[in-house]
Length: 169
Image (tube, rainbow, N blue to C red; front, side, top):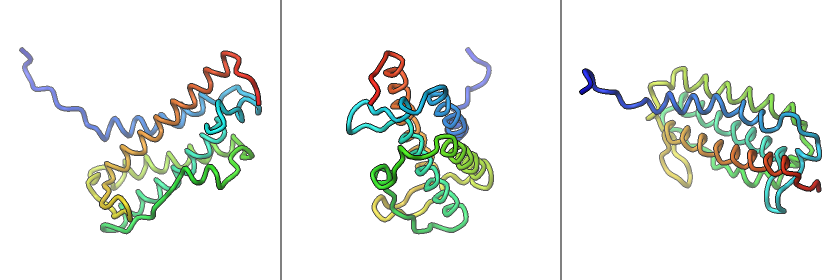
């Protein structure tokens, strides 16, 4: 029925778009809230909006370092990273939110530039993770996108709870 075949969507294009938009989405979930709302946790084992933002910034820093390493070297050894441990190790509730968002946005911009640059056609390049084995740029980007989506979903749920009058702690 159609005169030409429809090409499969380019996954890298969609992932890059998602990565670019994540920083703006995070900022929109934090906009207009006061310090108590930004620090509020829906439960004792959940993160606040400030903690989510700082955690995403620190994970982005590691993501960027890993991307640059894979782009610059042939099958480099990658560092193990436990972003969840940083939530406990660092006092994210005391961070300056505007500084955190600026840093996250800057790091994300750099990550996207690496992916649009020399690495654009080389998403099959890989590094060797100590526990996970070989990891390609494509796998790292997919994982980072899923990580973003998980935390943006958490932020949206917190924002909705606050809009419905969740108590301050």
